[in-house]
Amino acid sequence: MIATIKDVAKKAGVSISTVSRVVNDSKPVSEEVRKKVEKAIEELGYKPNEVARSLVTKKSSLIGVIVTDLGNSYVAEMLRGIEEIGRMYDYDILLSSTFGEMQEEVKSLQVLRSKQVEGIILISDNLNEELDQNIDKINMPFIYLNRYYYNEKYPSVIIDNEGAAYEMTNYLINSGHQDIIYVVKSREENSIEKKKLDGYKKAIEENGLEKMILYAEDIGYEQGYNVGRDIIESKATAVFCSYDEIAIGVLGYLYDKGVKVPEEISITGFGDINTSSILRPTLTTIKVPYYDIGAVAVRRIIKELKGDKLKNEDTLLPFQIQVRGSSIEI
Image (tube, rainbow, N blue to C red; front, side, top):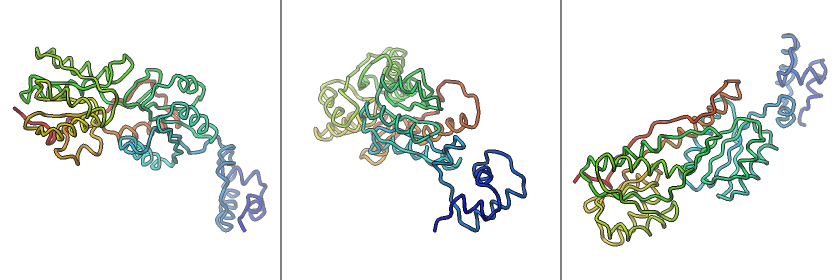
């Protein structure tokens, strides 16, 4: 039979409220009484009701995480960082997956609040105005991770996307390439895509070269494949894609058309998703530290929960150019 708090109180010879104080560490009790209660708990194998306990202490030791799709490798990497670092500090993760549906993001936020989570991390590819209104009401630590949009109202963990695109473009220029196509999804003002595009333009203009920009319909292999024809018809010797998924689609099209990479054209990406290192040729790309982004995000939440006063600003992490087989000097 499962022991109850009443059984513990009876065995220790104290009141139920005293047992509750010891279990929840809510009010001081004498050392003698504490030892009696702890001994009774051990002998009876009593396990506190965590839900009831959280209502008393106002601490659930839960951090809510809302994600788009666990099938995305970069999401899985962020989540691994969140979970592993959370565990180090005795916090568990309550996960909700929305599969990219904006209404599900709002619903997930409400569900997580009802589960008494102490903080929320949102990993999304959307810019959701309805969710934005709800976040303002949650009154708890919140981190916004989005590899496509940025929202200056909420802190995030990011890399210098403009600087990264600038460095990759310069890498290609220094490798002897003069005609470099940049493939981007959009140039929306509130998108990270625009920052990357600005980095490409800056490097091209500084070197007196001609800008060559193609727009993909979306972030994905199929969209990258679809821009392949325009790439073949151009005079470009190098292509820089704003996402690895687009670059992988481009590689597929070139392979189907018998165009040799990197001998005839160099291809580079942005992100370093898992697939990038197992392709043939392997993909030269900007390595975004997705695991570290998740780890730093949850660490920031925990710092706030422990009373640290943090500025409402982004945390900037380093990036690096991962040179692999899809690019060469000419």
